[in-house]
Image (cartoon, rainbow, N blue to C red):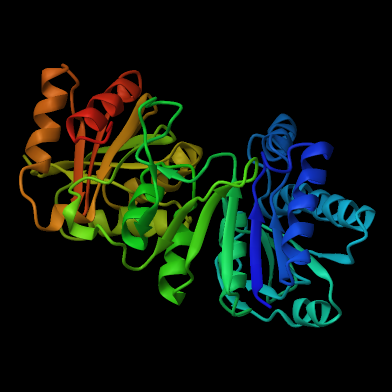
Length: 404
């Protein structure tokens, strides 16, 4: 008997018929003699609808109340999935994140998991039940409901797989696996059979929508091997693990696009020690995630600082920095949202030169202007116009030989 954790995304449980199909797949897994824990997301579109309702009532709704609201989506799905399994004669029980023993910190709308004590899950499995857990949510030490941020159901599944000592963790979505690029943008994108944690993490943090980056970080930390598969067929997916067969032989493994970015420019701030520290400390305290950072050389005692944040946090960043600028002696904050991030990723970059030069020359030949650049050992990211990013992704995908 194997213990299997399966996660089904919003499109996989998009309506009643799809929930029934998920139940049938879960039943097949259980009929093979396996213990099954299922993590589900809210139905596709439900979270966006709930956010829209909240925004229609308030421009700045309470984050605590947003957690209470958004958790409704997953709680609907766990109950319906349990009912679908009951209709197939399969004993099943649904749990909220709190009932599943997921304890988080106090950061509403983007909480971090601190510990998991899956006592009720273990008891239900002993009773030969399928357990369905609400993804994306937990509870803090004060007993307040919290949510884990966008894509948090991936994190729930992988985080549960570790303490449950699952033999297998399967992430079901609407695509067959991880591709060399988003197939909706790059028609020639190829499915990847195996990919390393590091490459998957860089792709996820660069805009690939297949996996949430925090879930990949967790998998790497605890050694949870998982497979990304389609819930609409039974084809093999992409296995994500520590080491894969190709490793450094392939220079670039994938291209990612992130259109959910805003550029924040803090101009005319005092060019003195501590100015940047105060800016980024304030953003960290406000739970604003900063990605790319560029600071120019100071002139005449002032300097400019540019960085990127998720678009949803752009106004929050602007509001957070207003009192900081007063404290450090003045400055201005401007927001630019017509940008996107293009990234190329590959472990092989560690041992091959010329990747940056090739990317920059390719974009130059296409008359695509680069606004910002950042690199790591296995990734190069550039900020460019959002209007040109899809075209740039297709060009980069081809020049690095990923079409074949």
